[in-house]
Length: 301
Image (cartoon, rainbow, N blue to C red; front, side, top):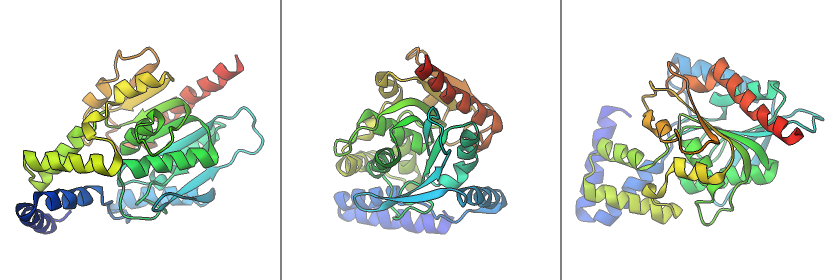
C-alpha cells in the first residue's frame, strides 16, 4: 500500500474510532478482511502468474457456490487410476491457485488426482472479502464436491484455514475429513497477525481487543483460540510441516511449535526458500509427493 493511501486510511480509522470505538472496530475488521488486488506486481510475480495460468488453462474448472460468494476449483484429472490419492491444494493470502499451479502439476505428474482451489477474493473466485469462515467454507465445499481428500496441501493463510476446516473450528461449517496434511509456511497462531495489522494501522490495545472481538463475531472463532500445533495433534493424522527459517512473513517459531508435539507430525526445514519460493521448489514438491504416496502404501498394506 502506498504511504499516502496508508496515511489517509489511518487518519480516517482514527477519526471514526474517536467518535465510536465500536464503529471503528467494524471498519478496521472490514479493512483487515479486504483482499489485495489480483493483478500481479513486478516482473517475477507476473512471470509466475503467467506460468500458473498456462497450467490452469489445461485443467477442468468447476465453480462452487458458497453462502455469499463462489469459489473456483481446478481439476487435474488422472483418468482411471483407482489407487491414486485425491489431493487438494490451497493457496495463501494475496496468492491464488495460479501461483501454486506448478506444485499441483508436480503432484499430478506423480500420479495423484489433484484439485487446486481459489479462495474467495482470489483468482477466479468472487468477492473482495476473505475471513476464516469463508476460507473454511471454501475448503469444505471443495471436499464435498471433489473429495473426500486423502491429503490437503496448504500454504500460509490457506494452511491455517485448512487446520480450522479439518478440526471443525467453525461451528456453522461441517468438519472436513482428511487422511494427511501438508502445511507450508503457515501460522500456527493468529494473534500475531492481528497484532501486526494493529501496528500497521497504529491501533491501540483497546482497538486491537475490539478488532479480535469483531473477528469472533464474524467467524465464531476468536484469534487467540487458534493453536495449530494442538489442533493438528488432535486430528491424529500424519502431518508434514514445511517452513523456512528465513521466512519473513510467517516467523519460524510458528513451525517450531509443532516439534515434539506428536509422533505423527514431522517438521521439515526448507531454508533459503523464504515464504513464497518454497511452494515452487522442485525438491519441496518431490518431498510432498513422497509423503502423500506413503498414504497409498498404508492403504495397500
